[in-house]
Length: 157
Image (cartoon, rainbow, N blue to C red; front, side, top):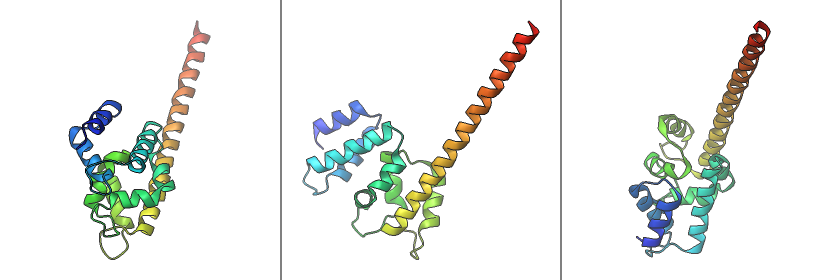
């Protein structure tokens, strides 16, 4: 693995040593022992999407190259193991996403085809938006409750 690549990722991300090594192997598309400009650019875009919390939108907008990136064995499908191994790049964790993964693998097996992957990503975006809406409503309710209690305490003074 390239020393500069290793130190760069360790410096700008919180990736573990194992994840940096995994990322290098994923982005060394030509198996040359080097990361070319196109691969490095894709990695930087992923890092920025993570920083801005828009991982699912990034996945959807760049679904084809991401699909090819995750499809490490080149069989034109993504297995649960491949998906799980690459999930760290997109902050995808936990069993909930693996359950959703299995729900969308309708190709007769447990692997996702490209079209199933796109549907899966859209479902992830939907789920994320619903979670964000719940958080927003909860925060708004907490703010309203705090404001109401502040007004009540001002009246008793």
